[in-house]
Image (cartoon, helix red, strand yellow):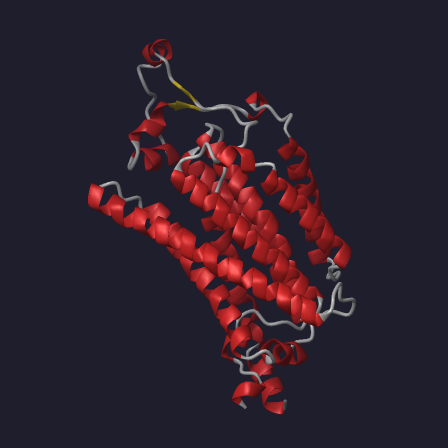
Length: 331
């Protein structure tokens, strides 16, 4: 125990780096995962009249040039406005609820207020409802979008399972530890299957694009980042399966570890949904291309990372050092 405390003291300054880097890369890369809801109309392409009037296509500038460098057709997409979208759809209600919950979480993170089981139950209702409202549209999607959507559902299920597992280690557990462990095990299995399903398809797609001369470095970078951060989650799962007492050991050394994991899962749930929505806008002609990716990064990375950074330096938790810690099995 004394050596563990000494280890924790020496590593204190590095608490934030690993987990925040994971959140940042995850939120950015998950902009690749999406489904197409019914309430967003298709983008319009410039017709002959507007093309003649505007000398076919206006000279691209800034981010448009970056988009055109690998797909010139983006210059022919006429931007739509938010006001042109039809918001009368069940997804709107769930999206508003998710945004409200996220706003509440931001204030809670900054106020160092601990999460509750009630908040977790609300998250289950909101996010499962949000994804369920999109299921009817998925069958009409291209194959790579279907793969991305179903995999993101699996990852969301694991995030919820991990959330309740973390809360079960807190002062007011919503369920017994045995039930939480079983839930986490099921969620971990779904997570690993989702990873195999997603990466076998999308890395194969990357290699096919290389052979066809259609390689997109930004997509490959995002996929590589996501592969890395999901590898960290696989490592977390492996540590828990390798030694059932490993997490309890970490929790004893870092008493607020449950709070950090729970809050990270709350943020992850919303950031996944928000990144999906931003990419939906991209495909429907609203906030397109690299400009969209920029807002994905700013809106789903900077603000939550700052909030979680503030929380982490104030509580007794660990971001990455626990990967090098061992439980009683290896003592």
